[in-house]
Image (cartoon, rainbow, N blue to C red; front, side, top):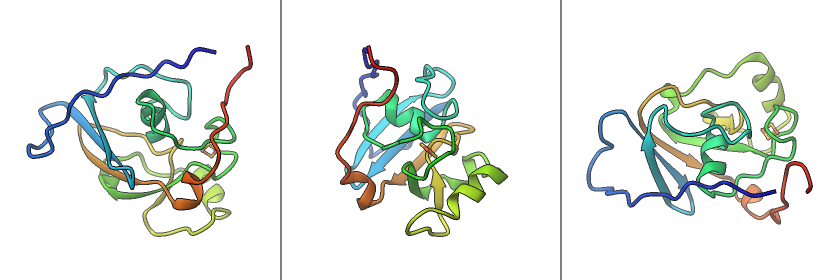
Length: 141
Ligand code: FES
């Protein structure tokens, strides 16, 4: 299976994102990506425009054992900025989150939290997620 990953463009962090631009920073790596809202292709990981979808598109490791269908909690993330511009958690996500480790008020599932408009988003990937050995997901070829 060929991994399609968009190349991040150089982001000038001294300036706010431009009109209609989405800027996402993944912590603690500190990787920031930026793209025009509505132009990112769906990478078939989680809901379209979910933070998992963004991570997959730009080569940021965010584990997602169930493939992004709200059936595990490995994509658990903490939203540091931009929470109000994300889709609201539905009952399935809230139920699943109850089983997550180290849940906080700003916890979301990366595969379910969808970016709903241009703006700035800052996401922290918990340490226990970052330390997993990355295994390829998806169909074997
Ligand atoms: S990847 Fe399994 S719940 Fe998000």
